[in-house]
Amino acid sequence: MIAVVTGGCSGLGLEFSKYLANSGYTVYALYNKSIDNALLLEDEYSNVRAIKCDIRDENEVDKVLFNIGDIDILINNAGIAKDNSYQDKTKKEFMSVLETNVVGTFLVIKYAIDKMNKNGIIINISSNNAIDAHTSLSYDYDASKAGINMLTKDFALAIEEEKKDLVIVSICPGWINTDAVNSMNPVFLKQELERTNQKELLDKCELVKYIVDNIKNYKNGEVVVVKELEK
Image 1 (spheres, rainbow, N blue to C red):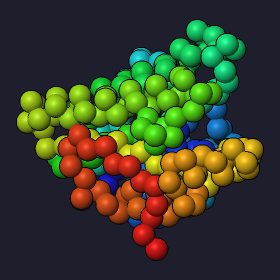
Image 2: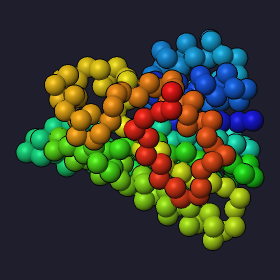
Image 3: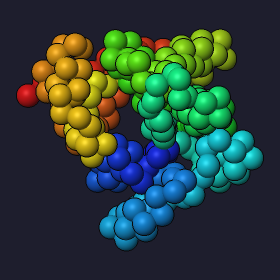
């Protein structure tokens, strides 16, 4: 069994890579800048191969995925955020977020979809920011995550039209217990949890387990909101 995880050497993606490796998958963890984590991951797991790949580069994506066949699970996790006010937001900054989060996701799906095994699944990691956790500092990030949800729906239609036995879904987690989130202003974070009716931060390890273990329950084109996990 083969799994591909973009952004697979840091943050939530690193947890996906580890969990899938521990579940018996051969994992291709794609990364752009996290080389130290990539080396550690390969040292820890004999069934993980960390590959540098800038998902914004179409030729690079094509070349990397060309050499990875028979994919059972593709997890599009790579993404960036550059929060600031609209007065300070530049076009260059806005476009850099869209290029990574939306265009990068599109390119990976484009070149992976014909290399997926029958009954394979594509999981796009979106965000509750695309639905009701948006803020006045996350214009580009929120727009990109909403774009990922629509990419999911559009590719789901293509899969049905081409009669492929694949499933593509978008997962929209709430606030996750990550280093980046924990470094936020605690007053702001408390307000956001209350505003979005989220009881507590999602544990990233439990979230990954929940997403992977529910693979057989997802429907093609589904957008799944996860604000809390069953205890």
